[in-house]
Structure formats: C-alpha cells, structure tokens
Length: 238
Image (cartoon, rainbow, N blue to C red; front, side):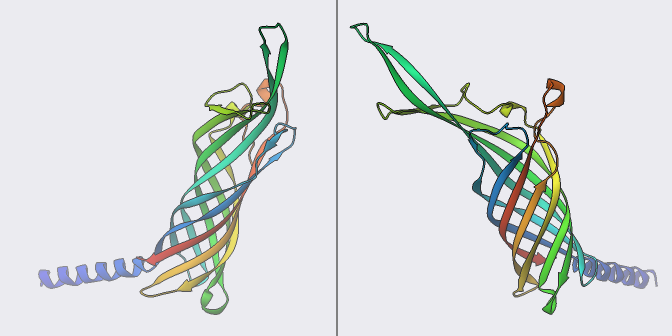
C-alpha cells in the first residue's frame, strides 16, 4: 500500500512539474541597437554620440495567463561617444623658421553594459501573436575603453594611443549603474515543438544621470541615454 501511495505521489509531482514547465519559456536574441545621449549642460559639446551596435543575450518568460506574462533576461549593450578636438605641433627648422602643423584629434569612448529588464508582456491579436511590454531595467557598466587618434592635416599621417588629455568633461566619472524604463512591441511566429521566433522593436529610456557625484563638484547638468533595439529572438517552452 505504501508503495502505491508513493508511486501516486511521484506521478502527481511529475505532472505538476510538467505543467509548471509549460508556464516558462527561455530564449536567445540578437540584433542591432541605436544609442544616443540626452545632455542638458553642454557636457557633450564637440561629440558624436549616435551609433549603431550589435546587441545580444538571453531571456526567461513566465506565463501568468493567456494574455499576460513576466519577462526578464540578460543582454549585452555597447554605447559610444566620440570627442573631437583640434591642436597643433610646432617645429623649428635649422634655419630657425617656426612651423605650425594643424592636427585633428578624435577620442573614441566605448562603454559596455550588461542590461537586465523586468517587463510585463501583454499578448493580443490573432493567436496572441502580437505583444507589447513595459517595465523597468537596470544596466551595469562592465568596461570603458578609450583610444585617441591624431591626424596631421599637413602630412596626412595618423597615429593612435590609449590615453589622451583630449576628451569630453567627466568622461572618467560615468556611473557604474544606469536605470530606466523599457517598452516595446513586436510579433511572434510559432514554429515546431512550442518554439517561436519573435521580432521586437524595444526602447530603453534612461532616467538617471550617468555622471556620478556631479553636484559635489559644484556643477549642474546631466547625461541620460536612449537606446532603440531591433532584435530577433528564438524561444522555446520548457
């Protein structure tokens, strides 16, 4: 009798586990993002901060009912700011003549982030194939690379180096965290064995100042981000 009860218990547990698995989906995604910055105090004068990069990561989705689900994951994002400046070199010839040579300077800053969203997904339309999502996100800065290129306008020669005094103000003081609101919409296409392919247009709107402790330096103004993502995701039911 005990063995029967024990077997029945295992069957019930296994059924519940299978049913619970139907509520979860996992996915991998990749695509392009277009990032820009919102600057309120001319901190980004003489810069270009609009670039397209590759983005990718994985997602986990929990289905609440036919229309609503919770979705999170981990994505990689890259944001870039190029700073432009001009300088000159001076040379003294053997004759004593002073020569000035104009130089264009470009410093490229790349900021790499891991982004974690937590959104509510609403599915609608025929077969619930259309969806919209909304919720907060947080991005963690993992690396900041910078490299400066000097281009001599007279000789046409260029050289680069990792460090330079030519850069936009407070480039070194970016906060290690960014948070904001993520919202988007898209469409899913069902394929075999509970698998789906989705195309989504998503916007991550940054809400916090990316420069840390700016007020403690007696300065005002802030830099906030905006990142538009066009991604394709392959997901599967567990």
